[in-house]
Length: 223
Image (cartoon, rainbow, N blue to C red; front, side, top):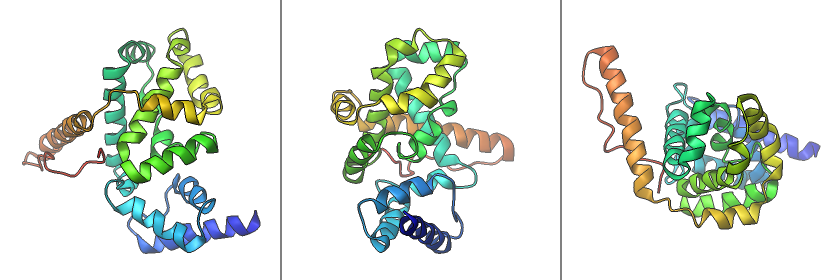
């Protein structure tokens, strides 16, 4: 509605002032709009502030200029696919499909930009309680649901399927139930987060010729 659009604009403008280092980034609109379907405008704004800045969410890191949080999230997700769906991971690798080609917006907006509201609302209900582990579980469950079909598709059809066809086919409640059966532990997320940050530290060390932070004691979004 026009009133809803204006409320969304006010929330996004207010956040750009509240956090002028991040400002407004593409993807925030989907998240804020989803909040507005449940909450009044002011509460939606403060919930946006909370999920951007507070543990166990820390979504602000996804929207920094260097995209380090997004790269880390994609790295962890890719490692989880390799661990939990090895045949699919190998097929996607063989076909030249990088996880960033289809999953970036899924994860940056926690599915609110692409998927049906039924799934989005259920995932967010759980995300606000559990944090990032539920996001990775649902991500794996979605891919597992269509693994057999994906294994029979070549490069160009894989991308079309993942970007255009899959989001509308996902049924929220069965996927959420399936996600709970996935053997994903917080230690897996911690392991891959540490691996990514050590890689980043090594790259900084090579570029600067001086020690960088180890990354081993940095908070992660995996609780």
